[in-house]
Image (tube, rainbow, N blue to C red; front, top):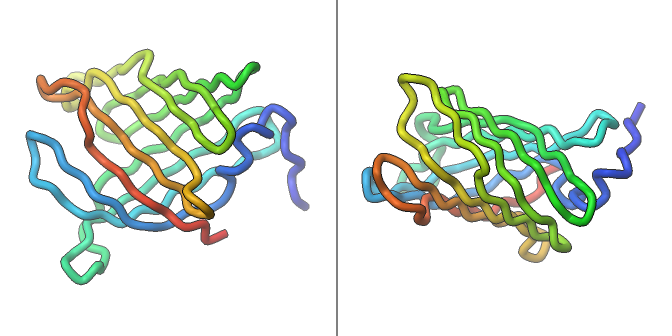
Length: 161
């Protein structure tokens, strides 16, 4: 039985499904790298999307290598195109983003970043997601380890289901 989409999810229904693709990452504190990624947006009939992301390093031939980051959370559309997003990382970081939905584009910035005693020092993030034709593209800017907010990751993913 298919679960009916909650009306509050209409503005973000373009995100629903499983997405796979590749991207590039870099930061002043690490070497640049290529990665493969799976992102899933699903729902259970309530007014939020369930979000998960997993990444792996890609070798020079494009083969998946060692696992990199994973994160999960909830995307909660609000009236007037606003959006609240909660993302948790197994590395001890939790982020709350506030953003805006404009057509098939979502732009959001951290309101709060909380971290455990042993987590990397992450202080802010900004994310942009949007459709590029049929693909999902995104860019992630990060402030961490004493660095200001700057480009960290970007990827282009294809819907696989």
